[in-house]
Length: 402
Image 1 (cartoon, helix red, strand yellow):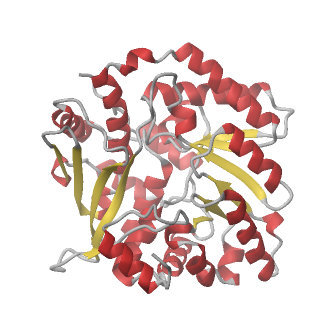
Image 2: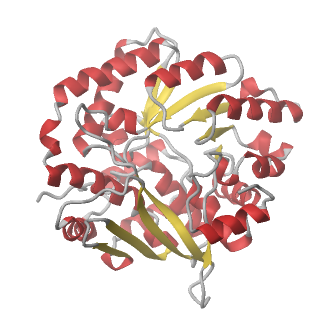
Image 3: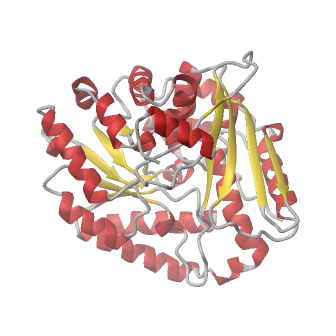
């Protein structure tokens, strides 16, 4: 079976930017992650073996000088030493365990130094998604010419509605070719609609950004805040994360993902200095309209005009939802959109994988004899990730109801 991931930068930008921040701030920290299939999918016989083979093949995928030069040109906020790290980076199958039970359910776990394991998540999710369609024969249902036209139509509608938007679809794409087709279509649509107010801004996928000379888009994920919460507690995790992020990137990459433990605790940590320092916030859970209203009220309470601040919406959106939010938000902030699965895995007869890999536990150095468990709460009450005892402990610490 062909190798699925063949380019080192076939990955989301936020994994690289977080990796850089991790090395700078937590060079010895150890972590554990676990894969979750929210649909409890039964995978084909032999899936785990082929998945592990694909992960093993990653050991031969190394960064090229072309990729480094592109990142230096487009991502000038990344310090030069990080590229020396990437030149020497090698994936290691020993950081991953893969198994499949008698019913076909998949179990994938990761453990190792945080800087060594952080670049596995997106690639492994993309492999699982594409491999599933390959092994079930569903890849034959994909009509890429028709998909190109639908992608063009999606882009045209969003550009025409004045939306600034990006592709965030690496993790759950139907295939590399699907994401490639989507990005190509949206770039070409944008080039044909230069007089419209909207714009296709770029893609989270660094390799495809290089291929089509686009801007790679991304900052951070919940993982960064979750790890800090495991080490230091959830009450001040956002504060510590903002402080470390700001000191690492010195004002660049100033969009903060605030919802790891809900709006209430973040708002208490979001003081005037951080509100001025960060150029905006990303909405990734909860009701988009309610979240925006709380953001607007918070900025106003700090005597900051919310219309000068960017708010990125990335909460499982489709085109219709994004256009509706654009209409509501246009005079309240600088809205933009990151859309994933709806862009890269939208095919008749194919159901997108509902899969995630989440951080479970962390220890600040390898010398500690125990891990500290962590979890993610978000603004979607009841859709928390982590074991129930840890979730209850964090909810109690934050004075939140179960």
